Length: 137
Picture 1 (cartoon, helix red, strand yellow):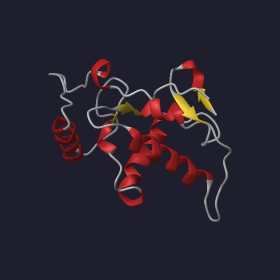
Picture 2: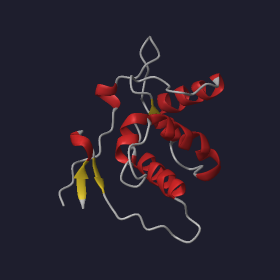
Picture 3: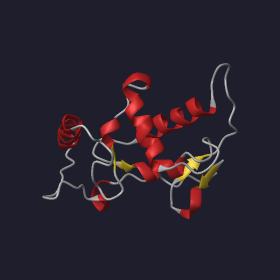
Picture 4: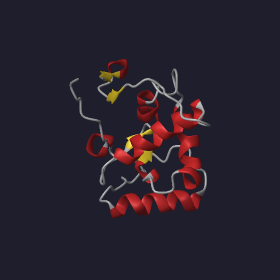
């Protein structure tokens, strides 16, 4: 079943949380985050908060944007192939990336996809934001 969470225009598939042997709700939550990030097409971005709103069904309630940031930080170990650089802050900035070399890497990876920051170092969300299509049931 597809639903629009919080009337924000983000349609997601809602499924019953069916944990596999040894899987925890935290792993299931992180996996949903990684699945969404994997869906972001080249040349687009999503925000931490946007993703947080989309994973509430699996994560069993509201998810703060920083939780998505933590999952992105862990992605080098648990999901090394996801395009982590396509997740940015709510105002089109780098969010919580504290290491300057990672900010530079993210800037370079986004630029290679045609996503160019403005003079303030922010990305135009009106141009680059990816919104999941509203898929009917």
